[in-house]
Image 1 (spheres, one colour):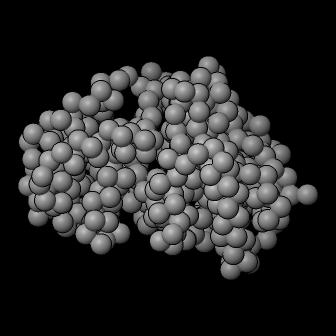
Image 2 (cartoon, rainbow, N blue to C red):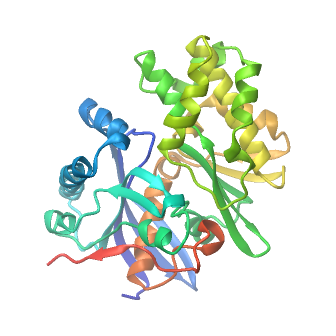
Length: 356
């Protein structure tokens, strides 16, 4: 399906559990360059029951996961259908949906994003491109991060593109190859402790700012094996649950101190991860609203120009790029890079379910 104009919806649910991001995107190819417009966009929050289920599903049995996958597919289909109806969207080429990651174990050749069952096309009455990560893992890759090809195509003017979501990840060009990897947990941990105070998140990092950095905890976190590994590398919620939280919980310090210390840890790991400590750092994701965290990153990278884009791009960049991945799949073009994921080859990933 090669043409110069595409009318699609990008759908993303991230590990920080703030909800389902939906963005209506128009792509156009002019003089071999991609241009985009983000039109209607919104985040549909999960209710308290779904948040609880998605947090604990990492421990589900195979039978429980199968049931969850069916139920979540129905939920996602209804959210997408409501979005289409609400905005009277017509003539869509496809809905391009990431689903929600429950298990991510590329070292075991396995990753699971729920919400990617064939019923989603039937329920939404749309062509759906989805399940973008599985093929990459089958080809020996990490299945993540997948956003960097979008960084290369849509945001090539920046030295680094960084997302601060459930985890931080970065992408950049090195020796004419796109390099990308996950850096550390971010909102998966910060939100966990904000939740203990009855808050959805630590607004602007105000609670973190009141805490004190605990040097012993900070040293333990910085010594974790993951940070010594070479890329390609990626993180899942299992790492937070099994490795990070137990380390933090050993320390009998206030939640403000835990938040402050972990923010410092995030900033240190980001600074260590960037090969060049100057240039432009294009920053998106919910963590970009955390003023304290951004200040700590800036303090570790004083020569770096941290650029935070307008709200539509800041909040919906991942939905935008999964929309692009879906369009590239429709065109039969490469949308996953071996230099990023470690797969055997560049490839066109994703599954297409036609509206029949």
